[in-house]
Image (cartoon, rainbow, N blue to C red; front, side, top):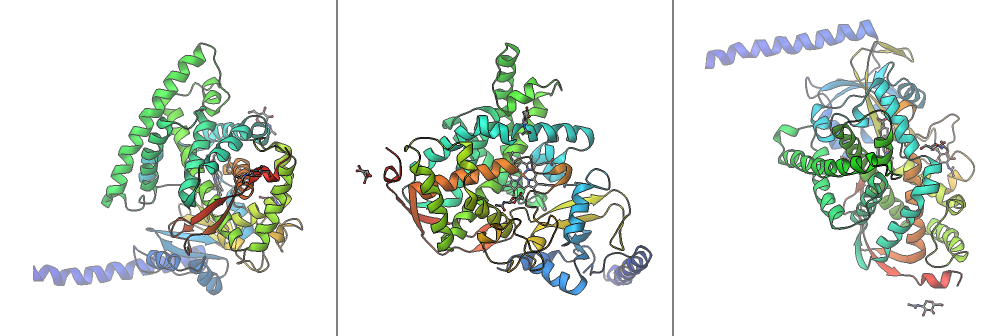
Length: 476
Ligand code: HEM
Ligand SMILES: *[C@@H]1O[C@H](CO)[C@@H](O)[C@H](O)[C@H]1NC(C)=O
Ligand SMILES: *[C@@H]1O[C@H](CO)[C@@H](O)[C@H](O)[C@H]1NC(C)=O
Ligand SMILES: *[C@@H]1O[C@H](CO)[C@@H](O)[C@H](O)[C@H]1NC(C)=O
């Protein structure tokens, strides 16, 4: 054994030297963006993870932008990766989706999502399905069909709150109920609640996709996914029968069944599941963090209350919000944007280069990973004055940004622009309306923002709520 041990050592040494040599020559030839690839294999992954365990929102990127500039090379999660904290480069990456860049996810993720998820589709099929999804949640559909239920379900949920409430948990429940209603017209009931329990297990699996082999959580998530898919398949079959008999519901499932694409049950189920996933953590996080930021900024809270009390004053207690009401909450829209900017639920997006790409004097080699960081841009003092503080008033004079061009991209852009961008804004606005008019609250415990593996608060933001006498606000 000992002999083998000695043989091993020079071999490893040679490999390491060889690795660095190849890297050095390749880099000279291609002029990679500057940066540090760290150790072989693990690269700078550990630095990345430990950086995001701190309270600083952007420690890993900040340090490297300072040393190398806004485009730099690193090596994380097993691959060399080019990071961009530059708005122009980010836009270039987003716009060239499908031409120079494509999205790429590990297989463990597609097992959870299903092969026919919009997030994993490419080419023409993606184009078709993306536009179908966009038209399912566009502003005229929200105005004419979705808003009524958004208003009703949020109000019902808030009216059941008493005493101590874990805001993030409640926001997730609301978001799930809304999505199930929008996708397949189900009102909350025992069936939706039991679906949600399984669904939560699926979501937990997403945070283990980097190391799924070792993870019991991942295996449990795959099992739960099968159950959720079975439940959805039953619904799809039922609705297919109804639709062949000429019944047509105005929901996403109705649109999928009515189209002349002839989707299979499996395709439809994967598609519905992906929509449930995409809106769930994101929308509930933005609801929770908006409340946290408002609570910590009393002037903003007072101003948003004033805005919504005025809307209520023109309505009776149970009268739902309408589109014109949504359109007359200018300060709330500032709060929505500022929450999206500071919280940055989707910190950025990963892509893979499909060919050698020249950008800003550098070359990104074919097949490399690229990360366009939205968060780094949103928190950059060059683009937003005093960028790291919550200041909704910055949006009152137009764009919020201090630099020209589109530097605010919380929903991405290009061919993969988030189809839920308007829906998420409406849901958050309606939630804030009912929250501030029906309840007052104080934080039940101190709770901190954390940024890894997702943006959230450590303790799911517990608050103590008290009912306001909303009928006093309203017209009789
Ligand atoms: C605050 C809430 C939300 C944020 C911040 C957000 C953000 C994003 C971002 C940045 C992307 C682009 C991903 C990429 O380019 O790879 C995206 C994609 C997507 N979002 Fe959202 N989203 C939110 C809510 C929603 C909601 C409510 C839905 C439900 C309709 C939704 C459905 C989707 C889907 C299906 C995609 C994939 C689009 C594609 O790959 O073509 N999102 N979202
Ligand atoms: C929204 O989508 C519907 C189809 O679902 C379409 O008829 C309508 O023109 C779209 N509206 C807007 C504002 O894009
Ligand atoms: C919020 O941001 C969007 C871009 O995502 C922009 O179109 C809109 O004007 C902004 N709203 C306000 C009130 O500044
Ligand atoms: C709320 O206000 C209305 C009208 O001012 C009053 O009649 C009612 O008793 C109040 N309700 C509660 C629970 O205080």
